[in-house]
Length: 584
Image (cartoon, rainbow, N blue to C red; front, top):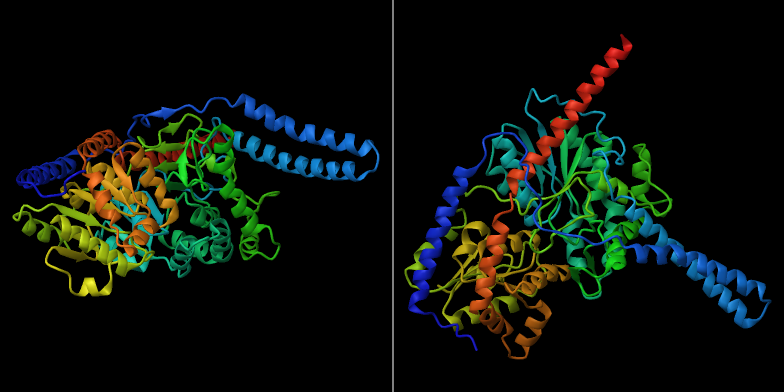
């Protein structure tokens, strides 16, 4: 029931929107802090999961109850029913004991702890005293959305006078080298990551099995590259990612280098130990699933990853860690055990309004909001020039991009996008990785196919943003104040689209549903865009942007790293002075 016809007032609204965006960019450039001090503000809204006294009591009692049942049945004498019953009780005892172990060891990580106290030796070779620039190494793994925040945070640290090296894939080399000499680029080679990402998107894919196999077979290569880079650059601190597929390599490299490790977490599905909310792969949602379910959900990935990657004595990953003199803990082989990860500083960049900070988070886990860099005047793909030239026609501008991976039917998606934009009378900016070769070679006048798109600049100028639900892109959609239509490129990316839709600020459209309907002659994208342009959805998108805008983002993240480094340097000086006094 919503008309998508272009109205005369729409062009005026777009020009006003663009003017506001330009003013915001100028203000951002003037607002950058000039000190090296950590930003001491709160982590935004919070949520209390409660004590969980009843679930804990039931979990604790269950193994004893089943064990007692086994003893009673065994004592009742041999019969078919008692034997079957005893076997069932014995299995239930084992299962409930494992559940109790998982729950109680997860909750043991809640409480005050010194940074890196349970992470092994990550500080013995830290020798920065604050008299020279801090040398920071970013160990990037993943897609464009994983590279961009490292570039943003690296630039802020470099602006404060520190030396920054960003490791990244060759496909994103230009993004990093564009900021030389502030950022130094170093390549990380990982031919398996794109294949793993594609496998995870296949129908019926065994996500946990694929993740475990990747960690098992690639630890030597990835951790070796990161550790060599740390040694050759003389890095004082390492910055990795809190992603199960790669955090094991980042942590192992930090153990090899014996240097402090910081982790960035861009996505709430990454298994943060909390009873307040969690990612449940069944309904594919990140929300409050109940106290006990949240605790178990947040632990499942670590347990399965440990068992699949390290349980076998012949595991390449297990052998590699043994060669480095690193212990693989028993019984579940979780290298990143809950108490371990709780003592590592983690900077959470996901939106604090969508997922408030649980009060049972580790004190070293900080919520900053998304990491943005200052406005970039460069326009390598000609997006800014093209949009400016099209604005005189008074037509709305849309963006459509399904991420940097090729996880969709590009020919069908091209047909849907062009048909929908043409039907409405909109101009469309789309990614080269989203559309077919034919469309990229010969686009119609109202379509621009770009290799790179400046999200922070473009999204506020769009009437609607059609995106894939990646953490970085979703965060930029939220901050733009524009309604989004999320068409997930990978299954778990529905989490972002669903959460934004829960706040009334966008629409979730599953890719399979879209393409199946298109094959049958129906255009669900047209309907979804119509819903997204409804006044209540646009108003909700503006409210969400206002709430997100107060997050300190990059400046706080840089301040956190520097404050931890300064505190560690002070502790080492104090320990050295005390040791000297005792020797005297």
